[in-house]
Amino acid sequence: MKTSARNQFRGKVEQVLIGAVNAEIYLSLQGGASLVASITKDSVATLGIEVGVEVTALVKAPQIIVVTEFGGYKISVRNQLAGTVVAVKSGAVNSEIDIELKGGEIVAATVTNDSVETLGLRAGKPATAIFKAGAVILAVKN
Image (cartoon, rainbow, N blue to C red; front, side):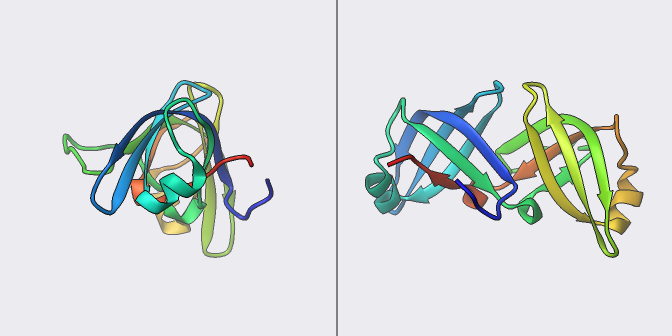
């Protein structure tokens, strides 16, 4: 599959919780991490989402927030993928930050150059990629 979303995670559906309008889909990723997607009930039916189905989760890089320190706070964002910065690709205004997860998967985030400086982002620095369940798009093979 070719898309403009840099973050493409392959995983397996572990749990499906159906609500009145939306559903929460819990995935285990190949590298061992897990994530949650929030999609409509109609999408669950159309895509044939059920426990055990292999899916690809797509998240655009601008939807990723990079956290280097939580400062004792808990946050409502359920997708929190901890890893280590492996690359900082600087541009004129923004930079792409690549965070390697324990399983070897890479999460790409787009942040401002000011944020790179403020957070001290550089290769080797621990960082967590966070994103809302609603930022996740699921795809299944026909």
